[in-house]
Length: 152
Image (tube, rainbow, N blue to C red; front, side):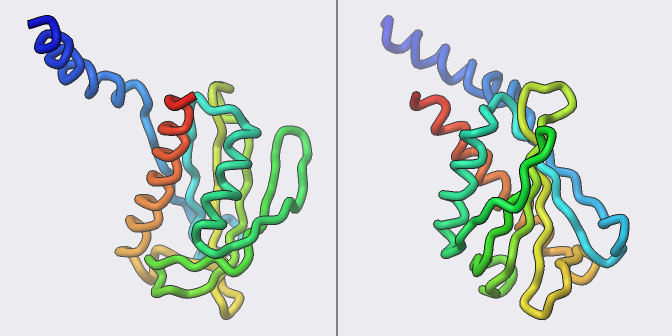
């Protein structure tokens, strides 16, 4: 009986736990290039250094290599080369990513730009279906961070 009550309580509380970790991604045009899209994920409750480390591992899972470009006043920028993104037709792309403290200082903002093989930047205006797939891909990254956090 005790096991049943604990199980029922867990089923009841699980949606509440997930509701407390709101995950949002904003999609914007880049200011200097209206045909380029950036994606910004608000990663809540995570340590910045762990977010950087796990991002590099996540990119390695897509055959890419990540390099530090700059670190200045809380903003850290990386470039990831030779990243294979299935949602973009298996193209090898370059990811430009910026990490910064979020506005409430309880997590990290990850902003991502995707440079295509021809040197242009990804635009959701030319391929709306893949924009949602990119958001889902970033959600997968956030879920991996959450799973790692709860294992420790």
